[in-house]
Length: 506
Image 1 (cartoon, rainbow, N blue to C red):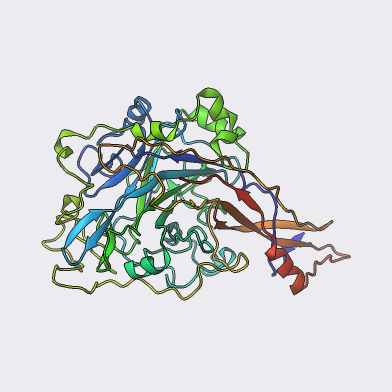
Image 2: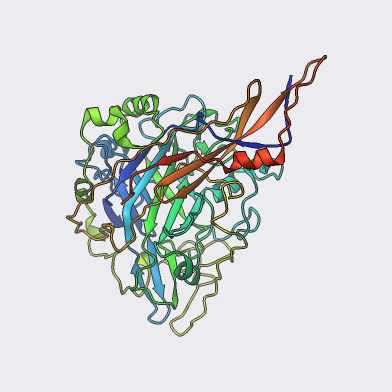
């Protein structure tokens, strides 16, 4: 038989978590109060930025997406729809709201984690995150996540706990060491962003990847579940089929000089905390084609150009082509300018609610509790947590990340900013090819290891993943074979890095 040693070793090498591809959706198809999953057939309560198929509409279906005339993503066959809430700036001095510019569109990572990973079936849709949440209940958000190997012992593997850890707010400063993915689970306040994040804020969202076989459910959530480490790990017994793991990245130009010092950033659902960030996905792939891509796109660079399944069928779309694709805004929303810079309220009349109580849906009461600010006030009623740890911690101590992620080297000043109105940028920026450094593998003859978690840290255009493994000690009636590793050797191994070089995410 075998049992696990109490000491986890950081061993670097290839494993089943490596394969992935990064879908580039450099254009937005629109910015509107539309959500065909949560508000099918009606106007949504808040604004979403949408990427993917031009077949997106108030009541879009799988067939509608497949019949779209274009996609804002690089692969012609990806007619899926990806959407998240937009981000706004609330100026306390004028009590006005302005759209924050989105940088570089969206990146949707397709991570092949787990065994027997399958494609999304026709008609599949899901959401991640909770619109009305305004608190964090998995410990202190200002403290680092405990190691993933401790989550079960701490009883932090419930679906609600995992969903809260599936959100990330990554402070971008390309001149300093980067933060890991899913490192911070709340939105930093303006003072912190001004002091530490000159290249903007990257919002991150992991989706559930465990499935019960149904394409949807009444709450749009219960047909899927997170594995016990959010982005990897084991699926619950109720959801045994493993889908490809989906991860969203969007970057917002929070360092724009147009934003003064007296105000706050607010998600379009009225959330200044970030705890209510969420996203929606509606599959628009040909399922057989996506399954072929999952079976054959095993290059660990993540580049679409490294996957012949995509490039043989049709050329990858240019940034200009991606940005030109738009959906038709319905007549009842045509006059609503969600990209304005002098709005007296958030689109849809959404009120800003800081919690910690859950936000109140419109119409549930005569007034909103904890409405945040008035025009003559200069102090927010919500204060973001203060970090008690360094986001640029070394790879041996940094909080566990969830995905292969990249950091764009371009700032909001020199990157093509995503168009947030009906007009789109006509400029096009080439994406530099990436090179891959062969992994450094540490091994010992006769010793067996088991993967317990993974960790990702990004540095410029390099992505560094640490695969944590535990040594397995084999015991028989006659002998016991043990593995002893000195503290100096453990440190040496932790200091190794396996880096994948990516192209600039401009």
